[in-house]
Length: 256
Image 1 (cartoon, rainbow, N blue to C red):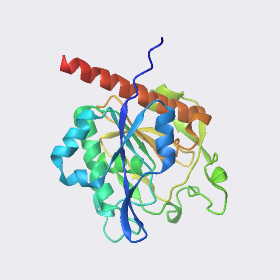
Image 2 (image 1 turned 135 degrees about the vertical axis):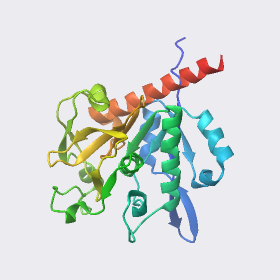
Image 3 (image 1 turned 45 degrees about the vertical axis):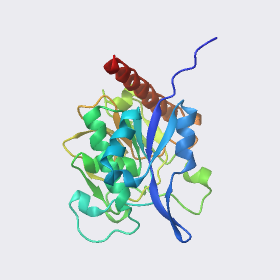
Image 4 (image 1 turned 90 degrees about the vertical axis):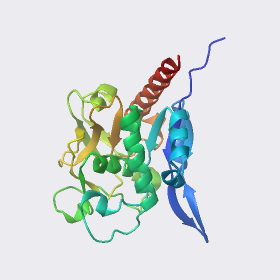
């Protein structure tokens, strides 16, 4: 009988939303589906962990990796040195995600950030965001057309150009590839703690990795959408889960 591969436990950050009269913690199904299909087990992480250091430490000790998902909310601009209000924020998500990124770096735990999660990694690295890409007159349109079906919204929108010798090119190859695009905000400046992993033809940063980390990759597009039907998405999730398995094996050695 062939032994099944270990299914790493992946902490997935949750978002706060109002469901009727009740505040709720939510996770979009597509992220859970992508992890399960790649051979991992999702473990939801609620905002209350920020105020409960003991529980957060206990959760991190159990986990083999972290996933920062996309979200309808935006980061509060004070995190990247800007003032003024921003609609649709999620302050608890900001605090938890930034704490998880720091924990990932301290523990060298594999980390994958998608869309908002990518932007959180940009900010955590010391970078800054464009709050309205379409108002800068610097880039092509990166927002989705919400009048289209979901299949069309998540269809190929533009190319990305991977950086030579980076983590992304090692996972998925160095050739130009097509990705979807469903975001209003984007990278204005990458911090000193990150490396650019890919750009769009208009120059917008589409992927970064954190320095001095074995696997901390953030992508601006949405590889979780029907992840097994796309070779780039499969490469990203399979590479992430493989890194999580290696991390778990290393934890076992530490206990011996």
